[in-house]
Length: 170
Image 1 (spheres, one colour):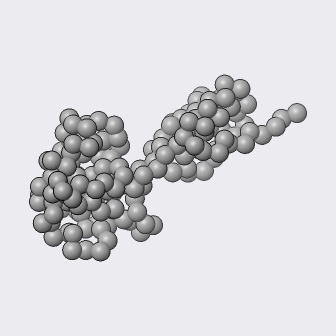
Image 2: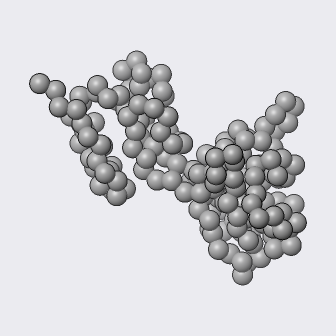
């Protein structure tokens, strides 16, 4: 997608993650949360890092944004001859907590509160702080397509963001 933008083949792309240079508008961003059974030993830690989760099995939804979360888990924990075990369930993100066990950890966007359902949620950290799940629009600054400008303004209003400034060309 980035290459398509850089070469002018695409006007706009929607990519996971924060802006990585160029023109970008973050639509939404939420912390990634780990759901653990109330008797899980990891709850004794003040803060959870990806390295603490290397030998765990993860549970995600097949619904959106489950694929994105699974890709983030794999990116953070895959290594030579190792792929983290990820179980995808065909239920809504809000119903995943009923599948959590001592050996199966839920990963979801947004920090939930399901203590009464036997699950405690914790943010997952890396060296830069809590891991976030984001969706961002990207475009080239020199793109003068009026449809792009209208779409960006519409997206900014829809997601409560400040519309990007468009360069004025004479």
